[in-house]
Length: 272
Length: 268
Image 1 (cartoon, chains in turn cyan, brown):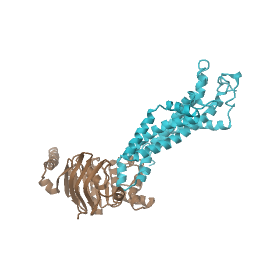
Image 2 (cartoon, helix red, strand yellow):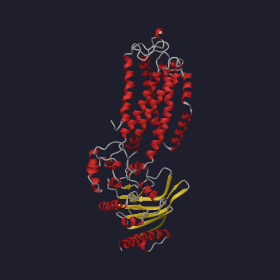
Image 3 (cartoon, one colour):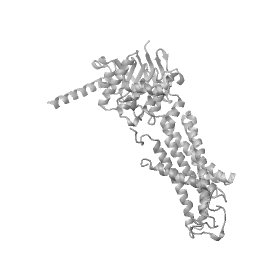
Image 4 (cartoon, helix red, strand yellow):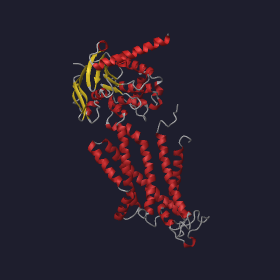
């Protein structure tokens, strides 16, 4: 454990968030949407462990239910981003020059568009929803992933050991399987966990701006947005969703780092 | 007909000519040393022979292996030759090995590619090959990753990969440049023994005349992409024709003299 602290804490934090999300499917202390004006902005107590918001909704219940939105967003974004970004990246690096160039310029164009602006346009067309946020975030992050992957593959392709592999008659498929994928694997895990972290932040940002998850569905970003107005009266309400976002993002980042370390044989203690 | 015939080989990148109309040939079992400074096109010639020039390079002229024109072959057809007929050992042993793959698997790869042997048979053969290139404790070493080995051991692994399919022509590209002198000598000896055992031809590329002279009977001297002299080793030492060859021979002599002077004076 001493050897890979990142992996340990990463798994713990991500497991913690996932358990919260899973738990909320079956049980929350209160109905997260139930409005109760009698206990508006209640301080944390045994009845409401983390207090209530301005409408008297239980903060803990909302936090639990919101984690579901957050993790589903992160999950979808990672899947879309990695499949789109990695195939584009590897494909571009292995293709003839003109296609490679076209891919580079297209990726640059997508990267030049601010993701939030893109989300606003998409929300105007489709209407704001969690799915709109997922699509907007995925497109922005997969461009970044494609760019990094393309470079990594190009570096491996130019390496002596790929030349050596060709010199002993390995075909393209074998080179991708045995040399390229293993050598970019660590970077792929970092990028996947990074995409998850970015997705969580971006979903919160978009929901905060009213471009992501729509009311009444609970979301950490929207909880932050609504608590902002009462920040001077009760700052604690804003603390909880903020803390939840930090913990989950940190968890994914540590997880990525930990997996990279675990995959690198030079960092492993040799068995002999 | 010689085993390998290279005729008017010209390699260029766009307008930049890096190898200019080079011709030489090599009989089966013969050894050729190619010497020249960095950038003289030594490696490019080697890559052209094995058909692995970068996509941006164009090669004209002719390279015939046992009468077959290699430059005209497609990449697919060429692959039948690579590893089996032609094999290459690279200069930098660390970068020429995949850092994330156990070395045993890397040695077995050409066997899996060519002879379609099973994985297990491949590893068994890899252990034998490790032993034949003089690696200690081969059963253990095939399970190691490249970073766990020393420079000399890595270069021996590179050598084991190259000879896995008993190639008819072995090209070694400055195999000892990255190694220190004592290890260098042992690795050269191993190459020598293996080539002798398998009866293969050898192209030995280096910038170090004393090293080349221990490995080959014939020396080709390259300068700025041109073959300035091609002679027997004794002829080259006794009567170098080209200015550059003279310089090389003088330098090699001077270093030797300096060394013997030094040892003489230090023993007195």
